[in-house]
Length: 253
Image (cartoon, rainbow, N blue to C red; front, side):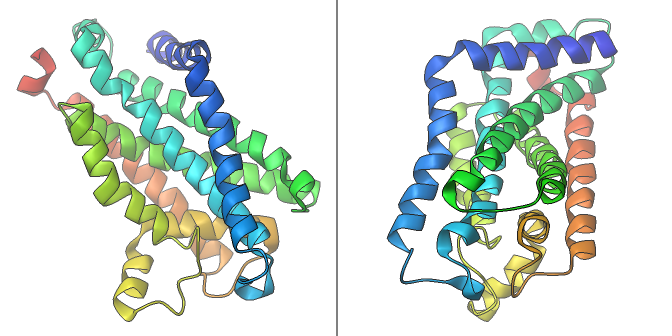
């Protein structure tokens, strides 16, 4: 089982590193987003008394985790169309190893890109102690694991990349926007504020804010944020494992 997990994990990493446009885009995208938003709102918007660039830094880490999960798990659909996935499914290995290998591969990519951006924080004026950096990295890993598990589950159930992108725009992007990654939600419309509390990514973003800045107005306590993030990770990983082990007609397509 561990050999299968390691092989699938290694394949995801190698596939990413060999795709130079994808590497370049993954490295530059969060930097460009952060520069554009922090530059545009630098003097006009200070949530909780913070400079917007500092506030958006934790949100950018969550965005890296989500976007990397989306683009890494979309390879599930590509593998099915190319026939690679069918070869793995008929191999004499536990199906849970497939989920574990693919999810850990996407998690590693998101975590690596997030840590790279985190290390750039002092250059952008976002200061934190070494202990805060380690705690943020630990939370980031759990966030990456949770959203990659979710992306993997959705991709496994999709038959086309177009369908996956459509679901991304109506489900995953609103989940990011309503998490407080871009703007604080405590003064939002009551309906949106209610949706925020059932958005699992809210707790991941909140945990990142706690470890980086000691918290922010309108977010739950650190214990609630950590519990919500870990529960989300367990649920999405379990769901991803379940859809793989559940045999269906799609396996033969």
